[in-house]
Image (cartoon, rainbow, N blue to C red; front, side):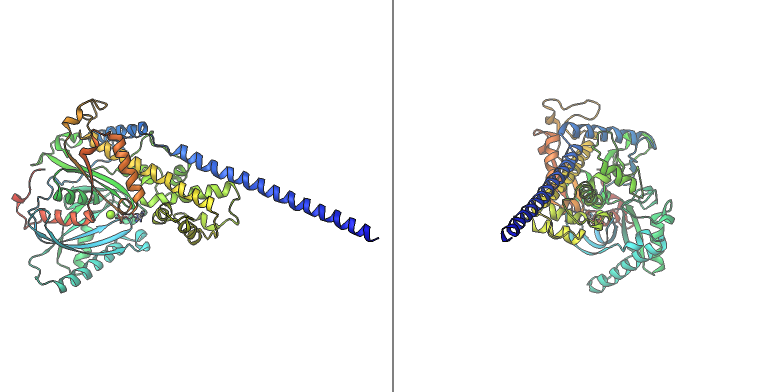
Length: 512
Ligand code: ADP
Ligand code: MG
């Protein structure tokens, strides 16, 4: 009897052990299969985002060709190539106190700049920076400008109460408005469209400067909007103020854009444009650049389709700070949908733009041995606790692939501009590839850069710089200098307000 019970028990245990073993084997097979699928998603991403130098050179050529087309006729290219009417950049002789207001995609800055009358002698600049309240980004122009004018007035009162010198004349303001504007003069222009998540519909088509001037006057503030500029133009102005070899400026912040100095006679669509300097600043609005050579993935296509501006700002959606974190979120989501390596599924993964690019950068640059920062951010953002180390490594790799592509394409864009103006060592776009010895004709060329993505994201910066060297080649690359102009978009606006102000002598403006 006892023997029978023992035998039955033993048989039972064996069956149970077999069941447990087979469950474990099945689980392990499933996990391995799931893991293989996740790795496959990463491999496909890497293939889709590949940017070998040959492809970057095609993007360079496409950028230069599109710039030509955009200058030849209105609507000739996806690049708008907007005239800014800024024909003269600051000389260094500007003197006095000027204000600037910089409406970016994320932040709103008010500045007061004191200029000493000698190149590079900015005596001081005071800055008030605050995030743009989310609700104002989709409100009415009245609410948006009321908020701006209130912040401006508060800042002026605060600053002038500390100031030892009293305000001499009417205050002059440079307004940096970083959205596509059809300028009608240096101080006026109509909004073409919103980008970077803004959508204040009653503003489209209206004079941006006039809206601000009205709001300022309603607040009883004695201030004139002396110039209306794009952030790229402000950055170029400050870059040129410090270094006359600065010929182009690029922004890598919430959005991305570039401007450069062009010969007035090269602007075919505006025949008869005569400037004393012979040149003028052109705003590319390169966020909207497109070329079949751009490496596009299903994530880009879906992001675009789900955006409020589909088929628009294609380059920006691959490059700028507003979008990089979102691309990474979409890849992680895809991995979760294709496999069950991380369970339970977190609904937070479905929330668009929940992973901000700052967090993506923090994960990418996590140098702790067990990637504890990656684990923390995945937990805080997506509510996925205890992500295993091998998955954390995968997430870092996703960030790397997405940022590497963005930075390399950005570099190709910059070289495209240099090619258009014959500063890439190839002798301009008509003469094709770089010839041996052409670097002898190279001139020192400075590219002014501004924006939180470039200044705060080391890996983005390093990939961009590396790609510049690869595209230009070792003979030409040393002539091209990338220079960060901190707060350039705001300080540059104050400088341009100074050089375009009524009190500033026309003699202070020098040809560029
Ligand atoms: P704006 O675009 O409002 O003018 P900034 O030039 O300061 O403002 O850029 C802010 C953007 O830069 C953020 O929206 C973000 O996309 C990006 N950014 C800021 N800090 C970081 C960071 N540490 N790492 C990566 N991207 C960053
Ligand atoms: Mg900005």
